Image (cartoon, rainbow, N blue to C red):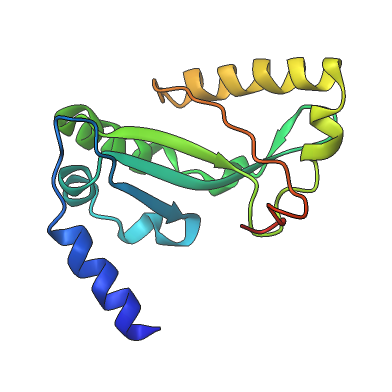
Length: 144
């Protein structure tokens, strides 16, 4: 495992931005925000994914305390703007997906979730918006 982590770190430090659309995405869990070097991440990545908020069955969003605190998010946004880095927010994964099925199964809850998502992204000034739902099941188990 240590060798894999070292290899991934080495690859990430030599990453570059491909003008043809090649994506180098970084996945940043909440316990790593405080030590993140935003400028370095923005220089080597095309996309940075903040892990993870979660939808509730009624369409509300919980786990917002897992997103970077305002001062860190401001640093991340500056580095992102200076380097054309896209900031993304992950919803669910690693045991945080229990509300997806009920939320997506109701027109009212889906609409409320999308409205709450738009408000969240506007409030956090995360300009890039892309919503992709992977539904847990036999081919996509919860936690991936």
